[in-house]
Amino acid sequence: MSDAMIECEGLTKRFGAFTAVDHVSFSVAKGSIFGFLGPNGSGKSTVIRMLCGILEPSDGTARIGGHDVVRETESIKDMIGYMSQKFSLYDELTANENLIFAGKLYGLHGRQLNQRRDELVAITHLEPYLDRRAALLSGGWRQRLAMACSLMHKPTVLFLDEPTAGIDPVARRELWDLLFEFAGEGMTLFVTTHYMDEAERCDHVGYIYMSRLIVCGEPDDLKQMPEVSPPGTRRLDVTCDHVTTALRAMHELHGVRSATVFGQSMNLLVDESVRRAEIDEKLHSVGISHAEIHEIGPSLEDVFVTLSAKYAGEQQKAA
Ligand code: ADP
Ligand code: MG
Figure 1 (tube, rainbow, N blue to C red):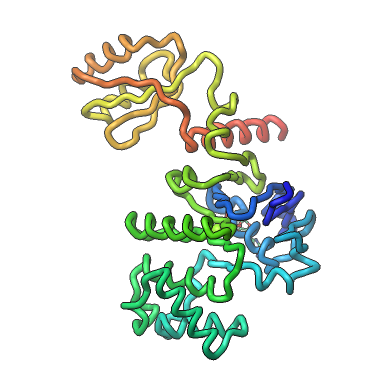
Figure 2: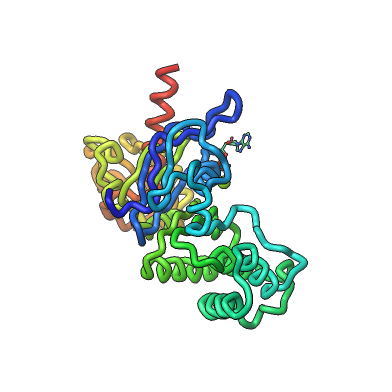
């Protein structure tokens, strides 16, 4: 890919005998948002640390804007911003002091420094909180401040490690609105998350499982992978009252391969032979008189759950 901003090839990190990242390859186009998902401990933060030049790969290569992250660390330093998973703010400093300090670390000073600070305050709406100590800010505002700090030197690539973990839904949406604005201006974003709704909004997503990147691509393409929809099955959305009772009933129905609750409804993966009337009858038998049943496509969560189960099965067979 010619317009790739982040490229890695066989990227590997070993800590002693343990392989934390195992031959991971992908690329991220300039101005796009890449969502990186995977269970805790699967290697997401370690990949970011290698891409930022903080941790040396044991094997493989990575380039940012064409620069090798190991041999050209100095060239990439100015190009990238990194918002780490653990809050990287100085609690004792005010929001303003955090911004100024972050700018100084990158050699900004005088009018240029203040100007950049003002720009970011305007973008992130931090104005009312400038004199507040970072320790006293709410989760959402801390994240905005941390993000503003990581942007002081105008990076063209921004790495965000679980930026929305533990913040409320409104703050979460607002942070994503900002990310889209940045991408619209040509910034490349690499974001780790556990939220499927966030993953759905990314241009590309990658899923890392047990140190291996097991799937990578555009959300809509991934949902169409044949492995995700086993032949002879379909997915149904069933909306009804008493969803927990309904779930138990569905587990007893022959031909139901899996059933998962989402709020007021259930998603079923069933054999094609299962008729809607059978589902209705079964629900009737547990006292649920009315259910709405629709056929649906797989979600991204279905993609990741199915492929990681398949991968784990293959690993077990190989062992
Ligand atoms: P994630 O961000 O997906 O939760 P990490 O990249 O933080 O996962 O960690 C992946 C694995 O590598 C974990 O098992 C973790 O304990 C291990 N690991 C991470 N950093 C180190 C280190 N410096 N030394 C030894 N093991 C590490
Ligand atoms: Mg992590």
